[in-house]
Each structure stands twice: as structure tokens, then as C-alpha cells.
Amino acid sequence: MVKQIIVGPRESALRIAEGKKNYTGLAIISISSYTQDILFTKEVQNQINCHDVLNFVFGDLNERDLKISPELINEFPIFDDQMAEEIVQFLNKIKEKDIKLLFVHCDAGIARSGAVGVFACRYLNMDEEEFRKENPIIGPNTLVLETLNRVSGIRENYYSWWKDIVFSSDINFL
Image (cartoon, rainbow, N blue to C red):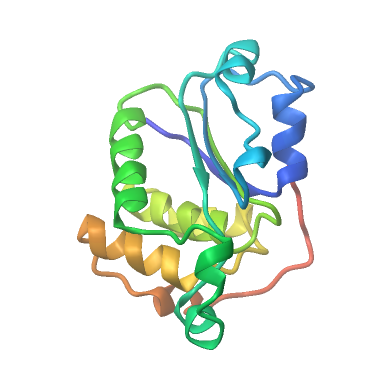
């Protein structure tokens, strides 16, 4: 059972990858913009003793971005149904394990990882209010969250995340 989900920026992921913090019961969903930026290679996974890692490469783009600048498709991979299915399968795999922390990161720790974190919270039936308190600065990417919801069958729409949102300046990253 996953006990906590933390969304963070690449700098927090770097600290984990460098082994400066030691976690037991850690699972990671790592999102990079470029293939050369993947942090959690097999070697790093073995070094930090974390085998529950899912790496992705896709840009922080949504439908609006693609309408305004369709050429972005040539620069960045786009989040798609296959990626969403991989996340669902990964969550199904780890939900029966003793996972103390699911750490989800992207470059800034706001949009792409925020969408995956919100989805994971809902998919795993965790306390969304607690998730909001622990991850106060996320602003989920619309394309990522809606794709995950559609592929998984969750009926919550993107805008339900913003209901009763309270912004806080208390930021506590790993």
C-alpha cells in the first residue's frame, strides 16, 4: 500500500539519484523533457536499491500549446494513451507493496508531475486533502491529467482539482 505521494522538482530527484538520502519503500515516477536527462537508469536504480521506477520522456505541453504551436510535436514527445496505460500498470504493481513514498518528479515539479501525482492519489483512493497539503504548489497539466483519467476510466475532470484550492507559500520539498 502506498502511504504518501510527494511531487517535486528535478533537483529533489537528483538528491535521491545521488544517494544523499536513503529511503526504504520508495517508488519513483520520473519525467524528463529529453532522453539524455533520464536520471534513474538501471545503474542508478541498483545503486539506490529502488527497483520500482518508471521513466518517461515527454514535454510539458497541453492541447492549447499544440493548437498555437503545432511544430512543438517535432521537438517534444507528447503524453499519450500508451504512457497513461504504463502509469496505470505501474500503480497497480506497486499498490500491493509496502511503499512508504511514491515520489513523482519532472523538471519544475509543478505541471507534468503534478498531474501524475493527482491522478495517483485518486487512483489509489488516497486522501486528496492530505495530498494537497503535502504538495501545495502543483498545477496539473491538463493534457496529462485528462488522458490518465480517460484511459483509466476515472470520471473526475481536470477542473475538480481546483475546487476549494487554497494557495500556500509553505513549500517543503524533499
